Amino acid sequence: MAANQVHDQPSPLNEVKSFDVEQQTKNDELDYTKRGQWLRAAILGANDGLLSTASLMIGVGAVRTDIKTMILSGVAGLVAGACSMAIGELVSVYSQYDIEMAQMKRDGSTDNMGVEELNAEREKLPNPWHAAGASALSFAVGALVPLLGAAFIKDYAVRVGVVIGVVSFALLGFGGLGAFLGKAPIVKSSLRVLIGGWFAMGVTYGLTKLVGKSGL
Image (cartoon, rainbow, N blue to C red; front, side, top):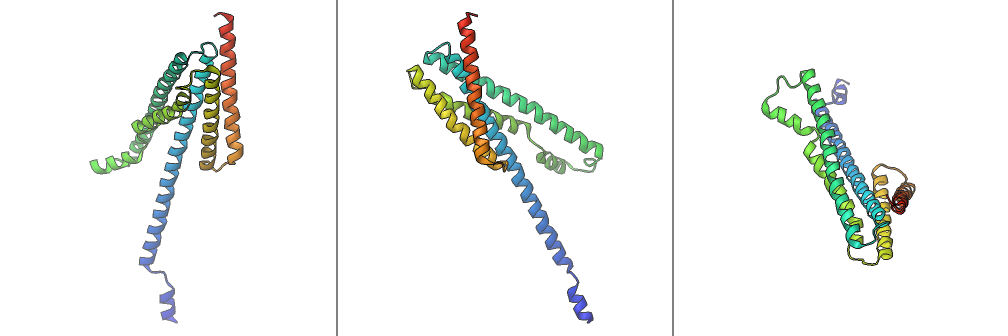
């Protein structure tokens, strides 16, 4: 009877192994979550670059139909948008970094840390420069889609049609991938992104055309 009770009691070694497995599982889930968040942010950045650059090109094309002006407006939108995204992300993540470091100091968790331990804790925090670079790159990748679509087409009507076509296809792809990562309905989310993109391009074209005709 006593022997059975001894065997029924959990071994300390088994408890340690179980704890290690649970801890590793939690770490893996945390890493997966972080990767998912970064990937979703990259998709959103690419979608912003895609739609804003395409809308800008179509809007400028409403009053200036030559290919040079249309391409230059797209390039300007790519550079300005990528810089804006990078600076905004840098400021935002640096603020988060400073807040978390200040919180650690208030909690006294850094008082007894050595240099290596403190550096290891800092590496766990979001890197502002990495975030800024990722935002700028994702925006630029999205902005290249309408630029490449319009680059080699001289006829204005065909050029606008190709831009709308490639942008629509990319919007569906980005919308579906973002919905997949966010575990949302893929078809509904993709169509929502597509219709929103069409609306943005249409409004930009219409208002620019109206301003152009007014002679301002």
